[in-house]
Image (tube, rainbow over all chains, first blue to last red; front, side, top):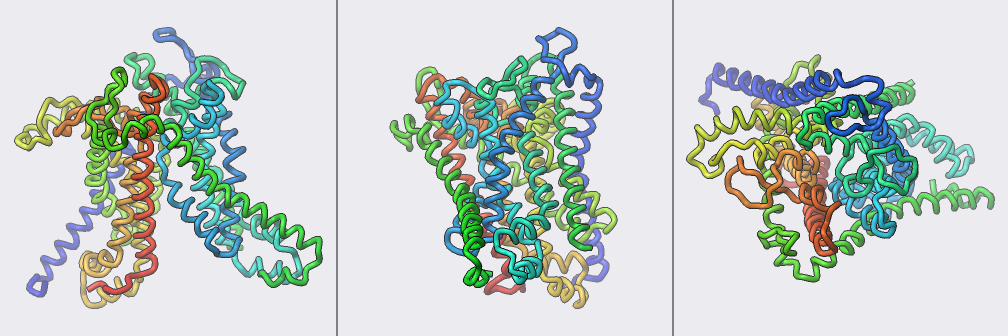
Length: 284
Length: 317
């Protein structure tokens, strides 16, 4: 080390800096390529009817993913109905309750299970809903998405609720306001922007899931308004189009992927906006 | 906080008790959910567990029609693609994290970090679509012939360039786990005390020397944790791999050959499983996957926590 001249050390330093820059480029290359292709290949097929009509057989012009968009929306809504209260509630529990063996067990479980492969959850929902009902259904798909949502949402919620300054809570309690009112009206209201962010990100993730839907909601070529019937989803539709041998369907896969990316992108942007607003509110 | 309750009026106490009970119930719901997941998996997998777990895990023959179920080809495919993903993603991620936290121009950092967040938000099936129509053709026409001509003497790079195969699976996984590994590494680097870095710089070290001698030794367990977390992600990733790995339940030494992974075979066969034993075998594969991801995630969390607390014995030399 001592023998190295200043020049060599400077050159090494710059080389490593350049290498880091190269790594950044390497990481951005697939992103750029993916976004460019989805946009350039997806845009031509993106007509108004694509959003509103049913899929057509191969070769037949027109057709769209209207039922798949509806299916995704309904299953995600169902997942929110179950997943948001449980996930956020468990997160509030972790942040607000005393540190004991039970809460530590809950936290550890939530942490470890937020990384559980989504396909595994699909099998669980299959066993819980599809087997007893003897039928693939949107209900099973929604439940799978809800199960997937809960652990990571609980962890995010805990972190966000913990960001609320202790002084606010203490001031409320010192005024003689009961604990539950303090939790609800002071702590949760302060954390509301953050919670909205967490919820939006969880929704975005759920909307992009494919694997747990493959054998729970399956797919459907028609409009479906009943939760006990097989339900189409944007992601499964993209998958089926992509692995088909037909050029016409590949084209539709790109357009559907663009729709999905727009949906997920909008949810992410909304989440960012909510977080920034809440951060700004917290500072002032 | 707790003492405030002692002299509170009865009505308020009841409110607190209900609130506490409700929160406890929701917290308990997490444990319940996880319990249900484990029980349900074992329940669906029961038929194959009865026939002998060891023969199932180490069997190489997978033929649902004749009722022969061996998991080894899938375990092998998952391990090969995940290892490949780690091999590619970790150096890139560490470079990225260093760029974000230490080296990059300050104006560029938010742009790069936004791009990485975008990478993390893209759904798996869209990666699969891109992999199938962009990555695979490129592998077939450019990268695989090139690797074959240069390293063709190694069994890893022998055989015809098909495109669909372990290499495609590993590369698409590396792109997908990159945001996880990079962002966790970045977090870990941020927890390194500034005094270490500043001390090294004050002693006349260049930026890279400060990183190599002060920052990286401190952050090493955390980077390992980020790597293991990425590995956990890679193991369970389903759609993108299913679309590019070739879906052939055989074991090949060559990375160019088509293979199969644990999640992929579940995705392809579960909806059309030919009976309780077939479905059970697939649930058995899910159980393997589940066990692996459980162990890896616990380990990763532990390692990241070690860095957050700071090293116990060995200070960075």
